[in-house]
Length: 110
Image 1 (cartoon, one colour):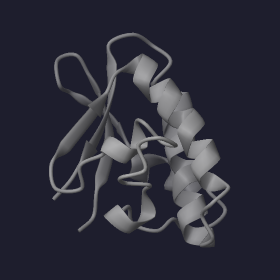
Image 2: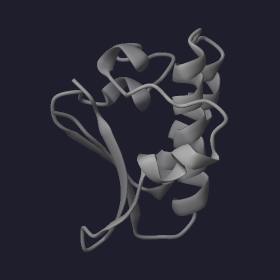
Image 3: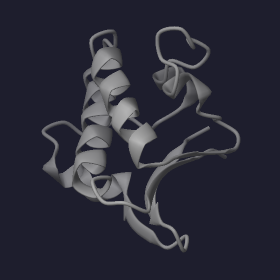
């Protein structure tokens, strides 16, 4: 099941989607699914491990910054080039849209 990623403001308006940054990536990213994320690895990835592939997970600005650090670490473990492109896209999305207050990074599961 795919997981969508969006940035929303405090009124819940969508400001950006992960797909918005795909054109800036050298490789077409994979679809985010549960097997692409380090789910259940709470000691190593305390934020990313809590993404719910079947529900919604929301990170505030401070949590999103920490999640980007975890993404960089997770990127070292991922083997697939498409998965690495996906992680790069998430980092670009966060860098572009999560630097201002009252922004929220949503992982929307199916």
